Amino acid sequence: MGNFTFDEMNLMCIYNTGTREGLINALKEMRGYLEPDEAELLALTDSTLEKLSFMGDMEFEALELYPDFDDKEDEDGE
Image (cartoon, rainbow, N blue to C red):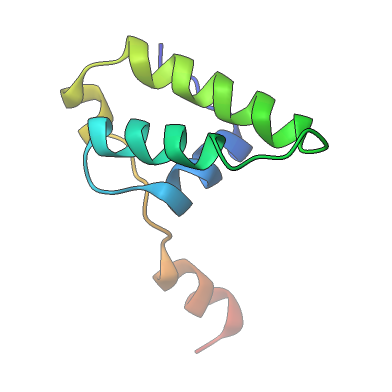
């Protein structure tokens, strides 16, 4: 179960600690600070946490959770 949406991948990139367990803990901590009017972010966080809980560490390590700056430079012609 690793079919993450684009938004879930972005969320994981922001809170990535380098390990699946660390990311889960960081997302749970962030979730505790959400306000009632942040329902969309709450739902996104919950769906991401659910998917992370069903995957193993090896599957997590195969995810590319770091932006590829080289592609950005190529697009800009630099």
